[in-house]
Length: 282
Ligand code: C2E
Ligand code: MG
Ligand code: MG
Ligand code: MG
Image 1: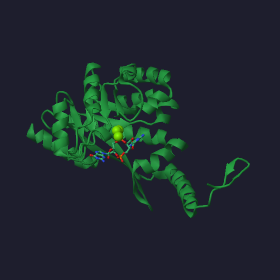
Image 2: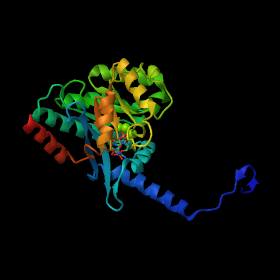
Image 3: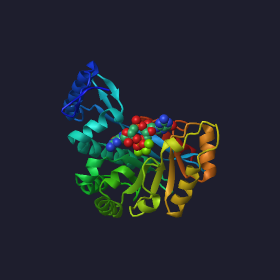
């Protein structure tokens, strides 16, 4: 225990603190220029229909190829972008790139139901920016089947301001975007409460999905599936890593799964090839 003076805890200076602070400043500055410099990329991870193991859609996942630090994952830069406000432009970029790819996939592969694509939305985009305006701009630019461009939002995000979120999400949904509740099971709200938001899909967090084969699979997964279906929502299980995960999820009645057993996040080119191969098989 350190001594307290004037109520402030005395901390030993850790050399790493300085590095962390200056890295953060560098990231903030570099982030402002990253889009213009073409350093941001969107990868697409396939989402599989468990019934027949075909590709049903993709989730868009952002990567930053930093000139000095190499490829950064969203965990390393999204929080910074969220704080500085850079996330608004990055989010619009992700939506635009995703809509463009989706429109190309749908033109190449005429499926019923059509392929979908989902893109992650962060707090500032929903609560401190006109997200409806961005969705309108993107959807009017690209020819895409109604409801197939989906926004992924976590329950923590919508619960920051539930009244406002319900209102804006209802309008976005009416305008023709789909809505997914991301990472479900990690927060504290009940699905019954979340019913007031117009989600079509719930994505079950991977902490409930991958099973190491030891002991019984948590009962919670079974109850989430039942309740989501009672509420009329489809289910995507995130983070299916093994064939036995896939079989169990399918037996539980999950419609879709996403995870390394089916495919890692891939470039737009690779995603187009995958869609092309599906076209050839059809
Ligand atoms: P998320 O939306 O829950 O995305 C799923 C994450 O799980 C992705 O991590 C994906 O690569 C990873 N994943 C997929 N399959 C498996 C698997 O089988 N096993 C394991 N262990 N992991 C798997 P990623 O790409 O690092 O993204 C992390 C988070 O960053 C995302 O979580 C999302 O919250 C956020 N994010 C990504 N792209 C964007 C974006 O464009 N905008 C915003 N606002 N957030 C984003
Ligand atoms: Mg997501
Ligand atoms: Mg997720
Ligand atoms: Mg997750």
